[in-house]
Image (cartoon, rainbow, N blue to C red; front, side, top):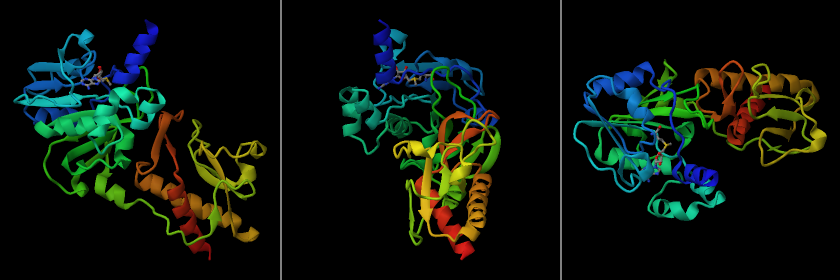
Length: 332
Ligand SMILES: C[S@@+](CC[C@H](N)C(=O)[O-])C[C@H]1O[C@@H](n2cnc3c(N)ncnc32)[C@H](O)[C@@H]1O
């Protein structure tokens, strides 16, 4: 019995949205300004989302669909088609299951029919396309990795809200609230908020990404390297991701570098001993500057928050290399 419940959770992505802390001021305004009278969840689960929005703006009715007949909603496979309902706004939390994790969890066969007809590698992206296909207004709680995804309709977004607090009881997946109004626009007009604070536009944030030119010779994951990089924030706000001398990073390097984990690395590059501290400072200054300017958004989220509530982030090797190249130019 318990095994069946766990399997269903995996295949159908049944993680329900308990707390309504995702309903930030700008999301509530978006729902109210749509003037829609029906809140419509095509992946309704326990109906928590519908209960949370039933008194906003002009909403007078709720409508839910689900593929799991036991939940009591009308049956529908919403990854294939979402029936149009006049005057409705879709508000949902679709299932998140990547093609990769589906095969790892041996549920690939069940989901094959969706991936076979799609350019995307996660069912939540397929769900988004189905939602905006027939409906103008869509509010979706989806993984934060969406920001770095290849989703092709980002220009139909009105806003993105990054949630630092976790609205789920049973998963720590970092999430955002994406509000679509289906108006064609430049992504420099798509607003990005962190919780209730406006940060910048999606386009401006994208423009701040750093890309390496591969013009400085350096080798990553080199156990003989002198430059240590903590590539993921720890839960301790005083031990965040940073560049430092190998000796100053609290890790027993004799254990080797776990290439697959990408939590820590050693890098070897040719910098004179007397200039190394300055080089490290330059790297950290650039890193801190982009964290500040983009409010961390260009760095991928990592499960769980720091003790001060800030979301943990991961420094990918491309950005790391780009930072190193800038610092190298500065000191030479
Ligand atoms: C992540 S849960 C979200 C439930 C609800 N929106 C909430 O936040 O509480 C996803 C829901 O989608 C349903 N589901 C999964 N695949 C589906 C499909 N192809 N069509 C319709 N519903 C589906 C699951 O049964 C589950 O109830």
